[in-house]
Image (cartoon, rainbow, N blue to C red):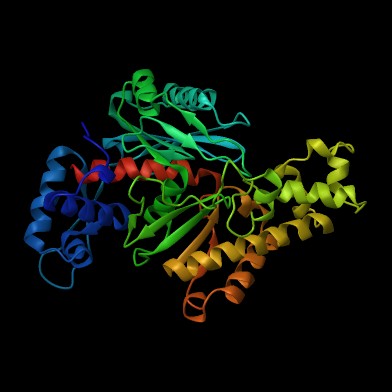
Amino acid sequence: MIIRQMLKDRVLTDKERKNLAILEVVRKNGPISRTDISKLTELNIVTVSNYVNHYIKKGLVVEGDLDESTGGRKPVLVELNPKAGYIVGVGLNMMSMVGVLVDLEINVVTELKRERLPDNSEQVIQQMVDLAAEIIQKAEIDKSRIVGVGVGVPGIIDERGRTIRWPQSLGDKDISICTSIKDTFEKKLGIPAFVENDANAAVLGEKWLGLDRDVRHMVYMFSGVGCGILINEEIYRGATGAAGELGITSMRATRDFTQKIATQLGRWEMDIGMVRHARERLDKGEPSLIKDYVKGDLDKISFKDIVRAVKEKDALAIKVAEQAGQDLGRKIAFIVNLLNPEVVVIGGGIEDCGAALLDAVKSTVKEWAVEEAATQVKVIPSAFGENAVALGVVGIVAREVFAQA
């Protein structure tokens, strides 16, 4: 099965749109009759039957048990053949990288997680390549049926996935990686590679794999530093692929000034400043389990320590998480006013702080967004947690496979 190029790089033909519509319905609702496929896709039954018969000949779809009949001949049910192809997805998160190998029904066959290097660099990309290679090596499947690998990374990616620029927080100089991520993966693995921004991948993954099909407009907040935007069920990337970067910065601005405006227009840390705020409170003598975790060395405090302390009902950690939720909530309120989404998903790792952060986000959005937008938007944690990016890029490859079926 050979797939050409990413959906984002071209306009779908009529045939591809029908392929995608039919196969998505079969994946989500199978076993299903051709009649029900016709109803859900709003395509006529003859068209649906012709397409489904073609999929059956290719081995992509199989016929199953007969459905209950209200009279006349019982309709035959069809479902995806999950073993017709496999997809690898590798996603980079705040503290880890996750790799999955799934079948065409997006059932996870193999999953691996590794700690990532703390700084964005070419070494991180090599870590991801090695993780993908390890997953393929360990998977007990027919390797020839792997149709592609999806790669989800933070930053601004050029249209062909050739280079990437990582915008840094709080006024630090951006990092540019000139090595082609796409070429690096394809050379090592020998299969087509699809590269996507992490937040864009996550928003598609949440929509395609988790949320109700009626949701058309949504935003995925990725650890507060970027967001994936879905408009009319399609990722919005902007003119040059830079849409979704949260916060402005200038190399002429001081770090103190950039930090001062972080909760307003500026960039901030991946953890929305939670580690920094915890250190400031501890420096003032406030008690906390966090200090015990790091044996008094405040420089060793990590986001994991914040999450652990929140779960143990530590008062300082809860205050820090609530403050972060309020700060993030104001930025989300601005986005809610601007884009009027139906759903805002909180992910990328910060959702691990649980209700302390999420409740603060919800109440702040309700307070600061205009009533018409605030009353209808749902603010929810990611359904897939740290797997969201890896599953999101899997979804991108799967949609391409379906479109070209």
